[in-house]
Image (cartoon, rainbow, N blue to C red; front, side, top):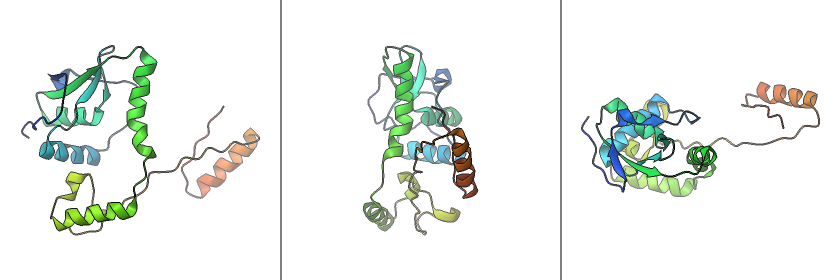
Length: 181
């Protein structure tokens, strides 16, 4: 796969083989997500650099893009180097990059109009980050946009009540976890 064009500001170019991921980044990328990401970067080029900490030398933002670049064998990727005062600030930026987008909600009507416009232009919807339902052709199927999961915090009066509630919610097919305060 040829090296994509760089269409963003960056501090310098780096060999992706020499970059190091942040060891505490909890975000995991599926093979399908990485395939889609590779397709988008190959088509549109680099629209944002990978962020690397000047302090630790670790990737703060752009782990998925880095994985794609390594797998594709690209020799150079754009990076921006940022300074962090300490581990806590560095880790907070890693988490913020992963978490903030999860709080967004799509306006379903506006999204449907955008998808319709792209379909009318016969644009490859995967290049907009959209996957077809049931593995069909993205241009010929309706796009299903699932809202992100909701997170609800419930305070229980006792550990016993918490265990009971966890069992009941799990039995209903919900994903739950206990948090001890």
